[in-house]
Length: 304
Length: 169
Image 1: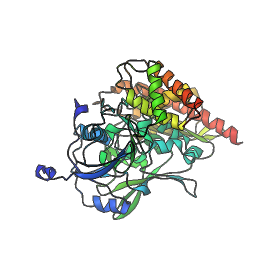
Image 2 (image 1 turned 120 degrees about the vertical axis):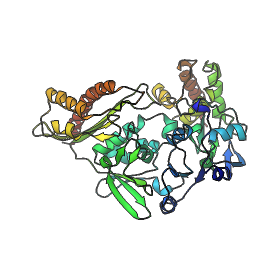
Image 3 (image 1 turned 180 degrees about the horizontal axis):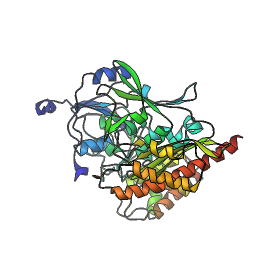
Image 4 (image 1 turned 90 degrees about the vertical axis):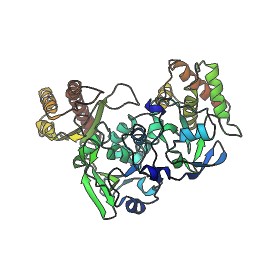
């Protein structure tokens, strides 16, 4: 009867700036403080007593964390408190990073997307999170702020384990920087889940393809998985199978085999057993690469 | 630790619900849904799954639908909240949507209806003439175990038509 339970007791603070926020969490010890973004995952963790922090730090009152900006170098900067709804409806996102809007549009329903945030989807470090795989294949970096300063970490190095990140206890994820992709490229994110909305992803695959139009080959290929392992991860061995190669059906089969070998699905999850996840990984990998390839070709033609 | 916790003070917040200003003193761990139902006695908003799966607790916060079971009441301070009880000075759209739900048989047990109606209010505010796909997408976060959804889609279409023919509002 989890759903009838009250939340555990906690103190609540609501800083209004990043500087105030960093000062608040400076020196906090493990489990003492919970950073509370949209709350759509956090409230469940509180209700289930998976988290019982002494103090919850609400982030909705920090306006400087809610922005989407195109930078001079063509990269896209997304504030951590940007809601999924804002991501879906942003024209800046649709210009060169449309897969991020498509991915966010597949998460939950409108009610959830009005609260859930980009930063929460990443910093929660759940293996089923949908935004990290496509962000990783763009080579995105996250900015971590503390009272000691700001540092940048590549998203592919950010997840240390199930619900574990490279962020220290006194750091907060403030921003995601997504480089502009090459012109003759395209990204796809495909996921399998039981229902159209409101459930967790069983397996998700992001594929980024850059064409070498002269050779009809993959100039670049990046692949990342949700729920292919205890964390979202980039599958570098799998990518290497096709990078530089020409497009061919046998190549897709080979890359799918390598993906199955590289993935390490969790064995303790009730949602799906590892064997089923591997079947999904095999099939979705092929499909995602094929779609991204076709999309990149269409984009190349439109530009030439 | 427990001693410290029992000392957590209540927080004074302003809840602006349906055009009424409510000064309430609440503990920080209470959800917006709990405070609406238990403190303000606005029991039209329903509690069901407690996880954001069913949409029965949907209310508008600053005009946007959210799951009030996944929202801390303290974070709703000074925001504009609309529940199924509706504004004190009336809301023609909200009334028409409910009338359409009644006439099209979109209500059986009625438990999902407040959430469905509030989500429809938000949809028609942004998209006065939604397609069936847009209606289903707007209501994708809502479960109804009675109607099979067909009548609900018809009710939303009917409400859109009725409001459109009245020149909108």
